[in-house]
Image 1 (cartoon, helix red, strand yellow):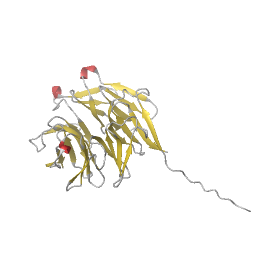
Image 2 (image 1 turned 90 degrees about the vertical axis):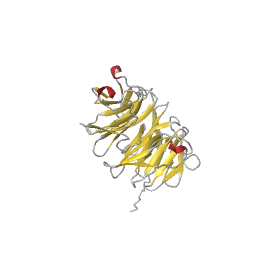
Image 3 (image 1 turned 45 degrees about the vertical axis):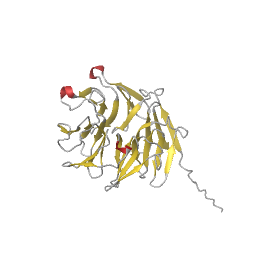
Amino acid sequence: MIMSMVHCHKGPVEPVWTTFSNADGLANNMVYDIAFDAKGNKWFACGINKISRYDDRNWNTYSVPRELICGFIFDMEVDKDNNKWIGTMGSGAVKFDETSWTSFNESNGFPGNDVLALARDSDDNMWFGTRGAVVRYDGTVWTAFTHTDGLLSDTITAIAEDSWGNMWFGSVSGNIARYDGTTWINFTRPAGPVKHIINDITPDSEGNIWISTVYGALFYDGTSFRIFNQSDGPGCFCVYAIAIDSKGKKWFGTTNGVKVFDGTTWTTYTEEDGLAENQITEIAIESDGSIWFATAQKGVTRLSYE
């Protein structure tokens, strides 16, 4: 008897780029932020007054009621109760439970009408960055932190929590602060243009902090800062967003495509590879490894692997 054995070899994993625009059901093509909820739905902050939901099959768009005014939606986050929070320019923070909308602004006690950053920490507190203050909401009590508490008084444009529960804050003037629940520490950054506008803060699993600015990216290892700019990394001055995947690769959304850094080598993805456009405003990574890229004018692109 002759027995034959067939060995099956899987081919290389191929990237699949898929773009979604208003023609597919997205509210509009100007997307500023992406968030995932507990049910696996994807939420997109779409320019002025609108957010869209995608459940991998269907699109739904929700408009903020006119009486809440709203405006540009710069950031979005989902809380422990699956409420969607949006930060607006001019109308404070708005909460949406998929049925009703609730506005928090200066008219009802919230300390500020411009909310440019949102984050949820590991204790399920919600954090809001406003002009001159950081606001924490534990579900019942609102607490504002200002320069009198130790925070440099700026417009807060980025918020993130590191592996030890410290909260990090970046500002429009480039100031960086860390809060450990008791003490505020303000950091001296490298001299130069990177002091301007911090767009995003992303801690990695080793405790390092990655910071995107309009003049490149910063890396903080707990002791010192390193600058990545046009000459030695992102290949572009303006970095809007940073995300880190399960393999530790850093993904940078820039005005000149997506730059990926594996610790040694930089790789660039542009429209020629499958991005909807090269101006990337946000990056979000799903639990299955799919990566979503929001763009300034052409919707969102998903990168998955098959």
